[in-house]
Amino acid sequence: MGESLSEKVSEEIRRVDAGEELRVCAACGYERGFHVSFLRDGAEYRIVLICPNCGARYDVGWRGKV
Ligand SMILES: [Zn+2]
Image: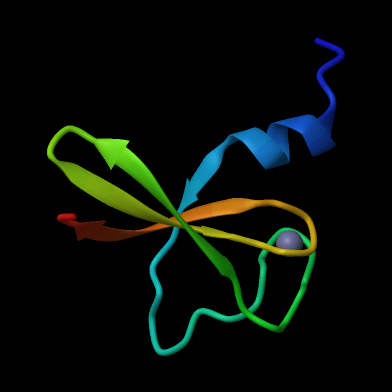
């Protein structure tokens, strides 16, 4: 439908399993880790990782109360 792939990548939050180490961005291959942001979800915050290179966002299932 003519949607831009790069726009979509920056908007969606991918659900990932952190596993042993989560360091490499699956979208662009950037290897030096992630920025962190906090997204309010009711009484808690979802801890969202953001690739500093391409802006892809990842939800590793972490939740925090502030
Ligand atoms: Zn990336």
